[in-house]
Amino acid sequence: MSTINKQEIQKFSKLADEWWDVNGKFKPLHMFNPIRIEYIIEKIKFHFNISKEIKNNRYLENLKILDIGCGGGLISEPLSRLGGKVTGIDASEKNVKVAKLHAQKNNLKIRYLQNSPEKFEEYNSYDIILNLEIVEHVDDINLYIKSCEKLLKKNGLMFTATINRTFTSYVKAIIGAEYVLRWLPIGTHEWSKFIKPEELENYLNENNFKTIDVKGLEFNPIFRKWKRSDDFSVNYIICSKKN
Image (cartoon, rainbow, N blue to C red; front, side, top):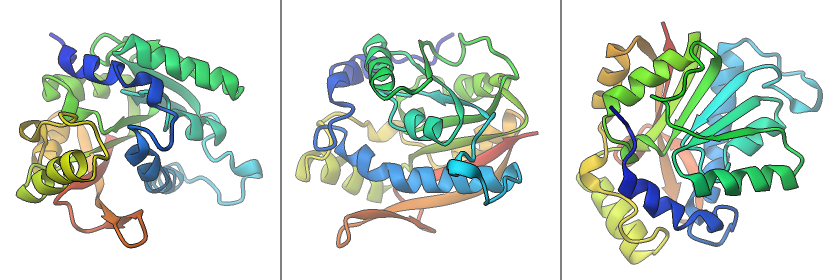
């Protein structure tokens, strides 16, 4: 049994050299990053009762974080700078090489490994797991969530961000982002692999997770910035904890 979709891995491996080009193929993720990080930090601070007054903003000191589908390390690096003990895994060897090199250049101690959650055996090891824009690219989502549950400590937090399967998401995330605005290479997403929030919550509930919060993430074209929203029709993020 495997969650790895080889076609998806090849697709992102071809783009691996562009991860850190803020005006390249991953520009949308660079634009997306601030709102994701803000939300993740806010929920972590509340859940783990972390004081606002922390030296050098190292809010994540001593927390073990697993970034699954880490790509070039766009989320791993900022969380490492905030003190997190970050491990990033990705099924693409090329992505892992790019991530390692960039972390070394920036003197960041991040452990990057070519792996997938069902083959990773560091059970009950992590305080936080990140599944950001990854579940729409995997095979067997139930196995994926089940594998994450084994890796997370009891009462640990998991963040799962993905795209809803709606007519609006087809228009905005595929027609708009890939064909009109050319934000993403054509074929980046398959609409049929998008997952509705209620479907994702069912997978989480069946695998020993409790939903803490669901938020929509919406792009404001006037200010060219992302914001949180109660509109889940395209992008959304679920914060859940392991029971």
